Amino acid sequence: MTGPPRGEPLRRRIEAGALRKFARATGQTDPLFTGGEADDAEGITASPTYVGTFCNDALVGVFLPRPEHDMILHTADEVDLFAPIRVGDTIAAVAELELVEEHVGRHGPTTVQRARITLTNQRGEPVATIVVEMRSFSTGQADD
Image (tube, rainbow, N blue to C red; front, side, top):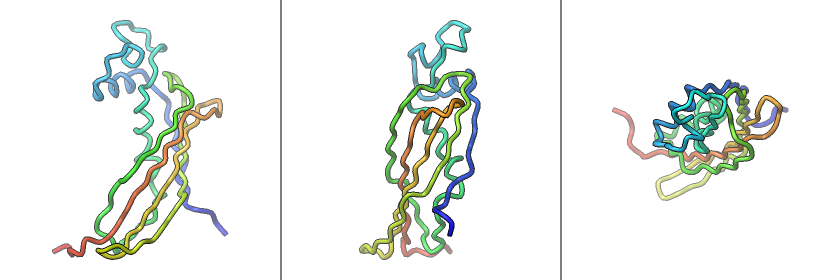
């Protein structure tokens, strides 16, 4: 018997340029996240929201497809941070399906799926967990 769907481990080496680019894109101004004017790339730390960049790739193949549903909603995230992500770290992200529930609502069947992504650093230390919840259902409108 096999367990719930689990994504392939995603590994990413953290580079200063990627953290600076993310900081600029999200409006961060704290030198801790941007590196400031200095060229000290080693001192840059990922902003707390950076962990979200692992979600899409880590979740590939984890959520169960529901071909009868034509609408998917990303309904919730829950993030627990344990340690900072720094330049030079290698972060491993592993996603595992935790929950699949079927409900019947006023528009018909709805599926709720929840997955947990665990991020660890190169020393095997936990960095963060991210719980992602998705709902899928049929809108009753067939594609033309």
